[in-house]
Image 1 (cartoon, rainbow, N blue to C red):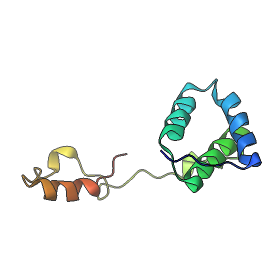
Image 2: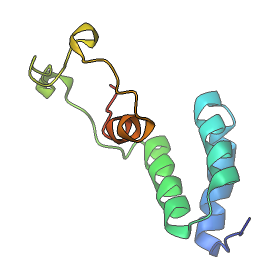
Image 3: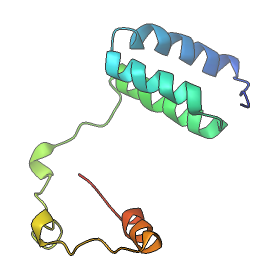
Length: 101
């Protein structure tokens, strides 16, 4: 596996995150998995920045009152779906479009 070289600023961010994340089991688990599988610099940097923003309180506040429930045209009941095709390639095409909320 390729390893990435971190700048001093990123190394300091990681050190700070490691301390802060130690008390947050779910974020810590995601962080450890990410470090294990991540190879790309910009992904690692983006993840570090995202978690740092979350931990610092800089993350955007969500106004839940502005969130609208999806309409019936958007959400399709499971029992109204057609059966899955028998062809594995066709099933894969459909699964590539799947969105689960």
